Image (cartoon, rainbow, N blue to C red; front, side, top):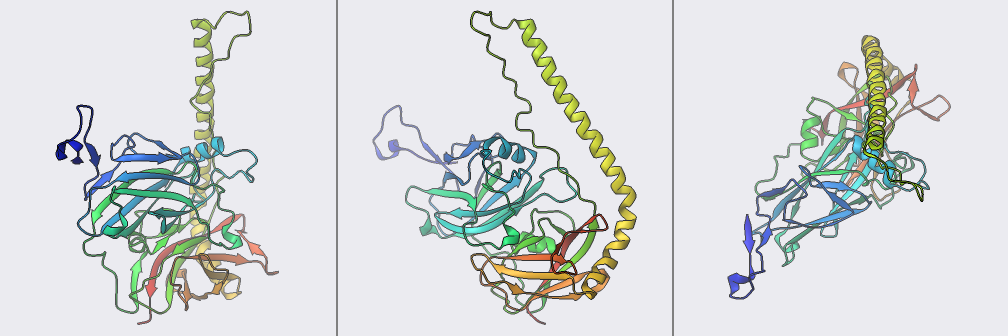
Length: 405
């Protein structure tokens, strides 16, 4: 760990302590690390950097003086506690109440927007469970003389289309910061430079070319909010084609957010009454824990029942998914648009059939910056259609092709 001290210059007192700074390479993975100098709207964590209690929220890390450009990676996550914190901390007048809703976030560093993150619940999950990271280069001169790397996470202030507005108000509240990494900028991640190069979805996610609501280890990525964030690939101009797998899935109602679970406040005695005895307190604790146990038991029983129904229906859903996608495409009921963040322009995308019952969405005018790509089904009268045969139309991103071969 790198330190500096006034005593190194021949001045100082016995009370002066070395200032601990984050070396490069280095990482902040706990709220107790001394390199995390400042937090505003962030509750420090143990084993994680912390969790935001306001939106926007920020924190500052003191970084050792770099010898060159630095790559900064911020790891964000949403979980059941994210929903509970949002329900507890966001005032009641904020409507609608969407503790489990999608979070469309802008990650800023040194006052400039560096990336856009989408954290969302899968329609088949009982609660929020999403991770996403954003990585960006930082020039050495962007770090001031004091070495403070200031990162803030906030809502996307630029214009977003109406279909993206159902994202949660005050989206940073409850979001967890797992880690912040600072590494010397070496060779950039390998990017395809050959027109027509195809990347699978996990590679697109790793390179920061798409953000679909949460990272995954599988070969396809769930488009969790009916849209995803797409970043351009400057080295390969021309159209971009995303290949997606349609799915019909049973939508799951999320578990209620429980902001007060685990906390017990003993009632104050009335004036003139003695304080609670140890026996009375023990009875209240037992009642409280019994209530928590009952809630957990009912939740687990519901999960088992839903999973059983889902398992029984899976063969039918898989058989209908590809056929339904092909039928909707043939009837002209699939729609896809691309909207650059901050712009009101909606660029229509071409939708064609692909092998294996998949569909291909092609945008001939890829934007210069981040954009939202929306996928939807329209009814015969032109209105939005979200459910088919009591199932939800869901999409998985399989691959992306950049440019024309």
